[in-house]
Image 1 (cartoon, rainbow, N blue to C red):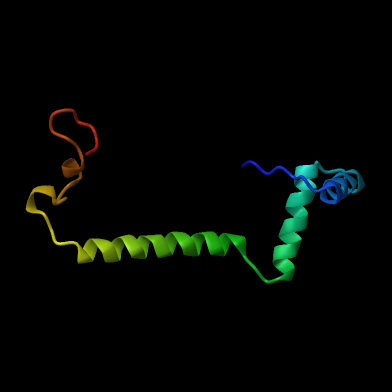
Image 2 (tube, rainbow, N blue to C red):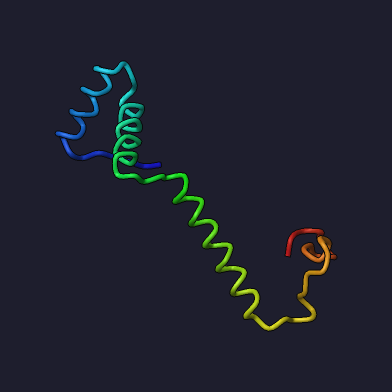
Length: 89
């Protein structure tokens, strides 16, 4: 969450947009970016969802390609936790 704008013109535009709309600078920038994405037909929510779906498929592929280790197989929820400490393995 560390956006630090070093461009004086962009900073001035954000300030003017905030004053002109009654929003905070962050709110004005957020709305402007949403409008920009909409104008370019980009859905940021869909992109985030797709990246998570891709990650799940990647993990599933890797799991299927890894030979099983009988001692490490997960057959039940209890198999996820260490017998001695009760903590996740």
